[in-house]
Structure formats: C-alpha cells, structure tokens
Image (cartoon, rainbow, N blue to C red; front, side, top):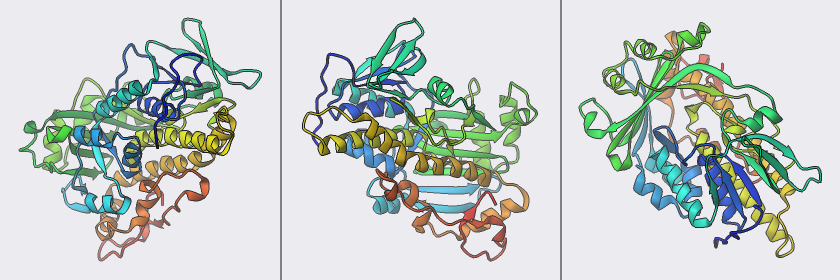
Length: 437
C-alpha cells in the first residue's frame, strides 16, 4: 500500500490523547491513510519508561506492513527458543523453537527495549506529518451535540475538537473513568525490572539466545537479551504479603528478597541486580463490552489493560490502531472517491472485532498467572503437564499469534481447556491446561 501524505494545516481528523506506544502507533496508522492526526502527550517530552518488551508474530506482521520491521530487528533481538523452567529446581518444563514459530506464522518473535520500539513509532509519526504536542494534560471528554465529533478540555482550560477523539491514556485513563467509571483491579503482585550490560551476567548461568521464564510458588523470573545482545533484561514478579494484608506501601525491596529465597542458582544470582528504586504494582481491569462512546473511542490500556503474563499489552494497542485504520481504508474504498471518513461505521467495526479478542487475552493472562505461581501438589501437576506438551500443538498459539482479525468471523477458535487436576504427576498424558480449574 502506498502511504498517503496528510495535510499539514487545518482541524485534525483525529485527536489522540496519549503518546505511548498505542497512541503513536495509531497516529501513524491513521496518518498513512492521509488523515490529519494530532497527538497530545501529558509529559514534557515523548518517551517510555521500562525495559524489555516481547513482540510476537501478530505484532511483527504489522511492523512489516508499516515498513518498520527491519529497523526493529536492528534494535532488538530475535531469540532462538522460549524456555519455561521450574524456579525452584531449574528443571526444563517446555521449550518452543521460535524459528519454527516464525515458519508457522511468517513473522518473527522478537524482544526489544520498550523505549526503542516507542522511538521507532515516534520517528515514523514525524515522517508521516503527525502533529505531536507535549505538556498537554486532558481533564475531560465530551461528544458534540451535533454528533460531528468530540471535544476535549485541557488542564489550562482550553478545548480542542475533532471528528474523532481516541483516548489512549493508559491504565488510569481519564476517559475510562468518565465513560465507564470502573476501577483498576490489583493482582497483589509486583514487578521489578533491570536491564544490565550482558557482561555483568555472563557468569550467572544465563541463556543469552533464549527467552527464559522461571515459574515458582507465588513468583516468577524472566530473562532475555536486548539491543543486539549487548544488554540483558530481567523481570522479577512476586506476590506481596503486604498487599494481601491491605497495606498501602507494598512490593518493597525487602519483599523482593524474601519472595525469591529458595529459588535456583541462576534466579538467585539475578535478584541482586534488580533496580530497587522503582517497582511496578501489577494491575489490570475487568473486560468491558463498550469501548466506543459516540465519537470518543478507548484504545490500548484505556480499553483493555492486561496483566503481563501473555506479553500482549503493547501488541494489543498496536493491533487496535491497525484495525481501526484498515476499516477507515476499507470504508473509503467502498464509498465515493474523496468522501469523508464514515467514523461511526469504522468505530462500530473496530469495537465489533477487538472487544472479544482482548477479553480473551485479559482473562487468559489472569489464568496464566495463576498457573505459573502454583505451589505444592498443583505445582507438580503443572510441571508434569508442561513436560508432556507438544510445542507444535498450534492450538495453544493460533488464537493469539495468527493474523489480526478485522471481522468477528475471522477470530480463531480458542483451545479447549482440560482441568489441571486431571493430570497425573507420574506418566502424565498430554492434556490442555485449564489454570482456573
């Protein structure tokens, strides 16, 4: 597809509130269709906080369409395998050949620094003529009475209008609070992160060419290389006793150390390297069925903030923008040449397909987290089941790594779960896991 050049003056066709990965990727997707797009970012500069990010084939497929995949490969790493191990004894539970995964889906599974992916989209937006404005705090949203668009109000009192307003303002979205009114849900788990020079960890028993996940009782630990193998990313996640007790100050470094006592040597060597001046309390929200309110649309974490276990949060936001832009292009192709965007039809199509997919990811992420953190006999059952899994049983991955659906009937079927309790600890037969059972 040839990228259209948007006009540089006049009222924007769309205002996007939030300049994270979801907001910028959506801005770029719409600008490619020749639309005027303005992004309003609260911070004084565009940027991302965090460390590593996993991007699966359902995302690298979109990056390739956008002409951004080669740049991402230069900045990231394409690992060889994804390996899950028991955090206590380090035994291997399952290994997925990521080269085989790429052959299945046509695009690679990659890891990249979050700030690098964000910067890729920021540069793309600048090349596409997106109006990028910082230091803008949006405090209110409303639809215009004539249904010709929506209005936002900023903290300094001024207002802006456009035919479409997209709220990509994150987990604690102002728009979500106004339009839905629900609250975040705490998992009582907290994440610590660290990205360090690879030389600092080479003697720690790491697997430089793999994504490795150690799963243990009420904790897990993730490792993989970044930035062409020059850096090494680590994520330590654990259940906070202070959170369970209702204390406000929870997930503190003393809890980090206590949570990983008794884990295997590689994990034990990684814990002292974690950043201890910041941590991320793990929150999500319950799925909702309505993301579109007139000409105001929720997108990314404002619509569907997940727990991190599926590594699909940023990907879902990128998919959201791709789907919306594809429907804009489809409706324009079906209508009169030069006609205005039928935003109502585009938004209806967007909501019709994205809500169910993201609901699946949110609920599966919660179940996956429960599965990772089992103790006692359930842990042994889980380990036995995982060791018997055929990594090429694609029913586990087709529903999430396959091509992003544009219409509900394109959404792949979910796998059929079998209760974990049906697994035998010894000589267990291959079964599909139901972590919620």
